[in-house]
Length: 271
Image (cartoon, rainbow, N blue to C red; front, side, top):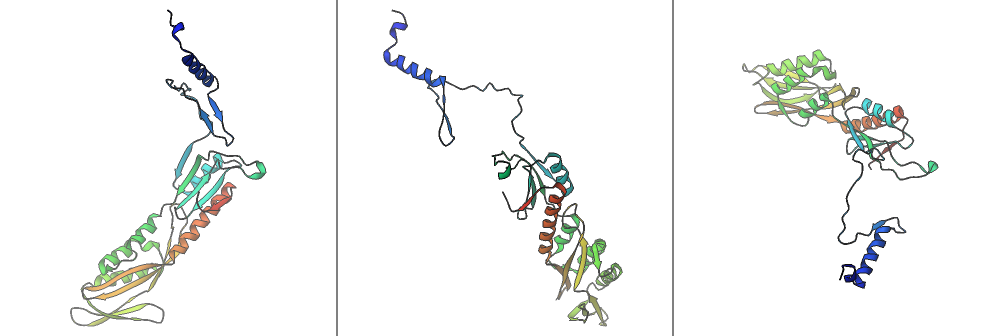
């Protein structure tokens, strides 16, 4: 008896069903989902062209300054492109293949091509910020001011350097409580080794002209001096005055300038 004669009606029916499924193996539902019949014992092998290009651009680029973001966006922008500015994440993003608007027919896009400016603090801001909020010895504070005096716009550099020399010269002196002068400066009375009383005048506020972010223009920010008289000597430090408002304003200006220089709409938020 040959093999054909041994095929049962049930097996023949199963083979016919499998053949029908393979003839049209996919079913598209009303909601757009697609399902495929996979008969038992069959495997699927990918025979796609490995050198075929995808039908959309999947590319993310991170740039270091606003000019680079503008140049990249202008190279690849089209009617779909937008700018998204996320202050909390410190990012300004050019979403280059975003969704089209209703006037052009709202179509779904992959939204996989974007350039991101990840904001980086300027070197000047990071140097000053590393000292902010803490109290420092006279010597440490004077050395820092001497090294970074070029960032100060007020008081005058010569005045600030003279204060630094006075701070270095009064190491080990016994300081008394300070007196606030009419112009806002503060005078500290101290005694040297000979018990002779002298005074040291220190400003209560300094103005800096430094960029907040890498690649941006300098802006004016204020720092309030802090003083503490201790048994071991005078302690000095400073705190930023409303610097967070300046950072937010600078971020918004950067986002708006990017939009102006690319002709793209800008949205403040996150995706």
